[in-house]
Length: 454
Image (cartoon, rainbow, N blue to C red; front, side, top):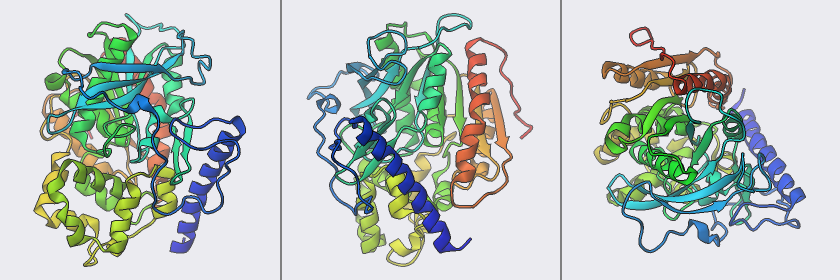
């Protein structure tokens, strides 16, 4: 397949998704909080527009109070959030609320972040009280509109200011867990939905936000702090789930963690940077770099040193993009065309001590290895987005630290490299086994482990 054909297919897929969601939004007369889309607004063929300001955020729910509560994981406020399982939002089974709660940055600063709490729509038939499954989202984007909690009816949202498109593609998994009788907490992660830049794939911050979401979610549900909880995520969410698992003992020891599923975790970002270069989702590199610059302002001079004009446009544009419009804008971009000296982002990251140090600080299974509950890690052997070897090595480090680890390899053969097919399909094929794994953990069944055999 030629480069031009691949690029046309990539853009066509993104545009068709956008059109479907936009027309559905127009047909129902609904839009995400903060969106300006209305029944008379139908996006034209120029979607998404070039870099520009997103629609002004007029939703006061996401604005934190001047003084934040002192403790991490403390609930600040909650608000009804209708979803398909309970469109009436009457507070009964299946009802949902979005929440704002406190968490902690990598520097130890208190910050407000957001999420969604879904009450179980079905009856839990397992052992003990109904558990709470904390979902960490796969890549949604970097702009506030991309947060799962900002999607209308937990499904979608459109920002006509810059064309950002929020598709809550993991909602079927949330609904399935709810139907099985589990309470569900969906994490937005720091800076995704709330003020400040989203610190994309910053695993320490993602782990803390996930643990604090568990605390806040249990509080909102009126459940004891030691109620059974588990973590479940894929891709970016897999990294966040694994980070929560390895940090739980030190950061939130009161939580009763029963198990974790971490699918395709971006455990070693130096390896991931190479994989997503000249890729359908190259735009995620902008998310990661903007997040690193947010937390490490000492890196700011690197923009002038390493990025040409198009590279600076890439950084500016991806600050407020969601994944679908990033694909349409930046899919299959070779990062060597964005730099002053023609090196790729990966080469620069390895050569610059400051940038390499930051990315290495996000590596899973390095600072923390005490996984205090069983964990299942899955990755496709031919995953073209999140390399298999770095996930396997992370699982091995957890094993060496005494963890109970089940590492699963999806055998899908390579299909259209750089298209993300080999990354997306295992998300679907591992979903059933992963849910079964978590149900077994909540029922206190002996956890499988293949340490030393993968």
